[in-house]
Image 1 (cartoon, one colour):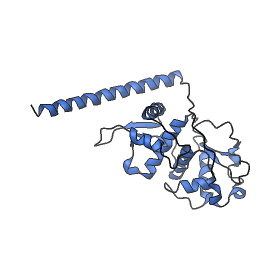
Image 2: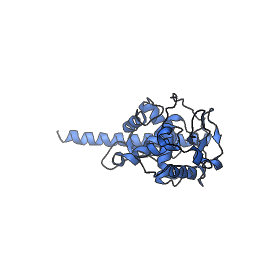
Image 3: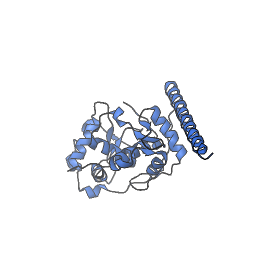
Image 4: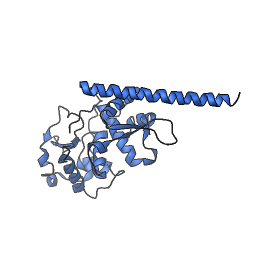
Length: 246
């Protein structure tokens, strides 16, 4: 299974997974809540400043790919959004937490992942993180992570997700060797939290295929119909409310 998501789509998907796992009482998310989650300054690399229109366009693409659903919850008139990672694979809680951090913060070491996933799940040791990464690399539905070569001056290798194209500067270590030299690379987890250069997001837009474009048009048409239905319902409620005073 291959993916070619752009940075905004990646940020949306990661934010939805994070909020589901850390604040389930407020999940699914409204559009405004999702925009705030995407623009959150903590636990995000790089920090983005997305507006509602940009997020909404990316949501339409993710819905067309069936990676995100639009839902309506009981007692709320606002449309909400939830991820559909179950369509991709039957990920475990640990696998989903690791993918979430890679989506939100880009390439990271096993030590960084262990520390940053603590709010979502618990890894007793670095070996447990590496085991989860290996499972994601060797997943029956396809590789979802790869190991990158160590940067000069660093003891540990980083790992990155495969939901978007790799950066030109990324050098991949063969996935079959993902854990082969883990013992020689494991160090104090505190050493792994080294600052990385911040990179401004550059949106990579996919040229839509004819079938994909047709599906997206159908999705947009359905959305317009839903909005018209909601508008008519509101109009009827307003007329009924107005009539009660006449």
